Length: 634
Image 1 (cartoon, one colour):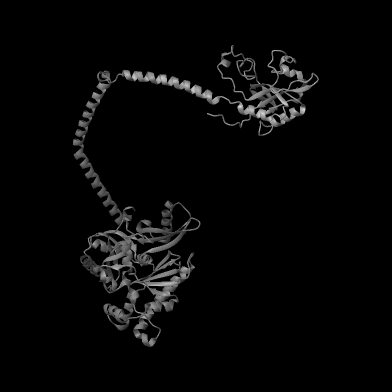
Image 2 (cartoon, rainbow, N blue to C red):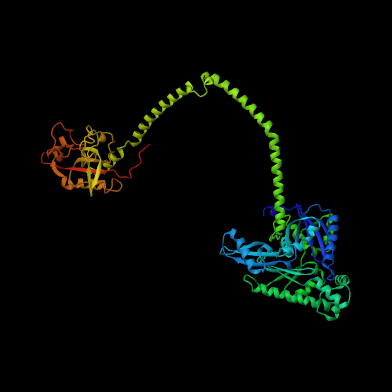
């Protein structure tokens, strides 16, 4: 439908009524819309005339309108009568949008006793439900009825662009002028035409219902003709000049008022029936106001009569509200009520409208599609011809440019390396030098990467040593004789050290599995594991000081309760004189003998011994570094 949704600013706008033909053209200005063309011709549709005579009279009238308006566009926008159209409003379930069309076709097929290939269908989503569904207005019309309605376009050799519905076009225009208001009322538009009266109901600012009645101004004319024994044209003239809706006073209404009142009473009955039906629908309601328009609305006293009979306010529409009239369109001011529909048709060429229905027949769609395809094929052929006309000189020019660039490149290559000019597939000496330089750079990069890895993996021991020092009780109560980095593992709840992973890596330690580094190439090729803890040997002045030291190390802010391995059974009381040659290896590893002579000297911070009778507590601790240690700097 992209072809049909393009801007239609230059279109022929026709309203083909039963008694009148109208042509209109709107133009958008800074102040709003302006009517630039408006031509109207009477084609009194006498019921005694046959269809051929009516068609001939319409054709003659439309030719006069086109000549007077000097219309040039062949693409036409026109409307069909509401009585020919099937309309229904339905609430659809929440489904993907692409399935709405399928559901609409199914719903219409259930309502109309014709196959889908015999009807023109369109729909519009007017609202979304709270559950995510759709409030959809569905419209359908038999294609042969459309062909009969739009025959006038074929007579003037025009092209159908939009087939609107006349009451919907009138609704669109009065919605644009603000006649329905913005208070969310339930408002009914009654468009009284020559042969039909159309009722369009809006509730809460949205289109809700449309119904056409087979009663109109011609029924009043026919009643006067029968009553007073005059022809149809004279009765129409009498209705327009002296006719009026009944006032309720028999003396004032006279015979003519009585005749007109009988027809209007039938109209009121059908209108009330339509209002009652709308109240019974889901989402319906009581009509609170009526807007009156159409050629039949010009009957004198019709508004007050309907207000008295319907019991709701009835106002006469003002279709020219907000419009400016150009010099060649003053005729619209004589009978503005008759122009509502044609203004709504013209509005579709200027902007989006609330109800955009298009019941264009399939033959018109197919003709438009074929014309569009033909237009594109012509463009393709013209484009191919232009390409073929320009490709030969373009190729010759490209070859010339390529030869010039090749010669220039050969000159540069000659200056760079004469060998390549003689042997273009060979390798330049500079390229060999470049590859050698790249290899040297690669080796340096590997060396730098090894150094970077070593730097990143180095461990800083200062934070751990600070924690150990801060855990010592105040008052010079703990002296440390040695600290040794080691690799700890766990056996149950106990910490097991594999020993210092230095040159003895693989020499029988737990991590090496008892293999010797110097004798086993497999162990030798693997990197030793990183130390993850400390083995601490030292002395405490008293058992209480040792207990305080261990408790401080097990604090969460220090190493934590699970990272300290201490067995009280391994602590022993020793003479204070042992501090002169403090242990640096556990007694268990020396066969229970403390080292003497050649040792490192007194333990760190140890007091001078007073007498041999004084004792201190010798201890050994295992500390595992917490996983959440501060990150090492890059």
